Amino acid sequence: MDRISKWVDERIDLAGIRKTLLDRKMPGGLTWWHTLGSATLAVFMVQAVTGIVLAMYYAPSPDHAYDSIRYLEHSVASGAVLRGIHHWGASAMVVLVVAHAIRVFSMGSYKYPRELNWLLGVGLLGIVLGFGFTGYLLPWDQKAYWATQVGTNIAGTTPVVGALLVKLLRGGAQLGVATLTRFYALHVLLLPALLVIVALLHLFMVIRQGIAPRTAVLETGAPVHTDSAEYHRYYKEKYAASKGAGVRFWPDIVVKDAVIATGIVILIFVFARFVGAGLELPADPSDSSYVPRPEWYFLPFFQLLKLVPGSMESVVAVGVPGALGLAMVLLPFYDRKSPRSMGRRPVARFSLFALLGGMALLLGASIREPKPTAVAPEVGRVLNSSERAGRALFERQQCGGCHVIAGRGGADRKGDAKDAPDLTEVGLKHSAAYIHSFIEDPSRFHTGSKMPAFGPPVLSHQEIEELSRYLSSLRGKDWQTAKEAFVDTFPEPKKPKEKP
Ligand code: HEC
Image (cartoon, rainbow, N blue to C red; front, side, top):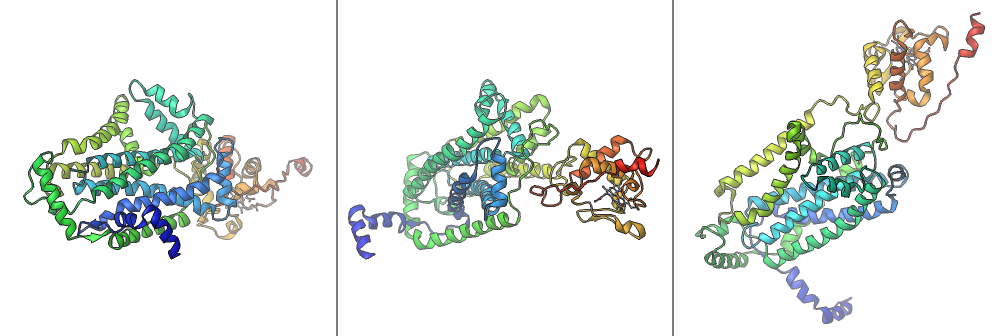
């Protein structure tokens, strides 16, 4: 071991590398907030590893994408957890990158001499959001399809280049094969390459320039503007002094970083294991009743678009993210005053609170919004219009007085009603046609049935049809994999003989 390291050392100077990477001096008093950047890097590594394994199972075509994900979820050992980790890891990346940006902003660390690194950071934020947007489509379920439909439509409202942009994103006029392969290529080839390059540059700059010291260190007696030779001299002096009193990267900083990164990875695993990534029904381009919902971190923006009148929508759709992006890019160039702590930067304080407050309000409004077509928990997906009507009838006719669905109902089960079967999985046991005939006249199926007949005039044929559509969508909690096992025998042929 010793000889090998000595051999390598002689050729590439391991000791030198060690000195610049591990032994470098850091300014003292770094907070726990300073660990967010390295935590993001750790989660990215988790994403890279899980992503590679996912790619081994994934088939990027509309015909097979959904099935390949379903296969992974249900038939591959730990497949569901693996996909869950990648899913929640993506959210963690967004949260961490944004939190890191807020930390850098509120400590004024983007100011001289770190303007360039702030720009790289803004680029990284854009790349992470790009990962989120392209990755969302890949499972090719309803959620994926319709959210991407909306997302690409929004891109289409860009002035002048809108139509071209949509075509470029979708690979044609419609969302289809070309869109999926395109998003897949971006997600697994272009974006990872970009992210690695920009992140390496970002890290290189951090090592080269050192981490910005505590805000107080650079505030006493500082010249007002950061772009004067006087300030540059002042900075150099103070920074050198702060390092003298500081700590070393290894082990002081590394341990702190590792604690936070490990905690976050454990949290991601818990979400993956106990919540999972979810998979809706396969994408159905003809089902326009589906209500699209983007990933949660795009919800504030989505909600904002709902609030503005139609004529203003395109202005807001492009203007707001455009303005926000531009403000971030230009930030270190228009804010050149030397104070770094939030206490001494009223404009920055106000902007940050206004932005975060606005986003939180929009997110809250979006979550609290009534969802008439939200996923029906007993069915596991959004109901179509006749199923919805059937569900309403089920309530109105008080079928739930006797029958239980997913643990609900059966409240006044006594006497005769005690035999009413649990309907949680009735869709697996009977066809819609059988259910229709049954509701119409149960006694035809079981003489002396304890269930009242609901045929006309109690309910119309259309209403019974709606009821049976709803009931046949009930497939229990394993609705995605459960197989129907109809043993339906219709009593029709016997009927004429029984009652001549
Ligand atoms: C008074 C209690 C009662 C009410 C109210 C009632 N049912 Fe039933 N239901 C039963 C009983 C009891 C059975 C068992 C059937 C039998 O043995 O004939 C049954 C059976 C069924 C079945 C067949 C299930 C199977 O697995 O074979 C369906 C479907 C059904 N009911 C739907 C409905 C619908 C829809 C409504 C409301 C419009 C409703 N029921 C109202 C008592 C009731």
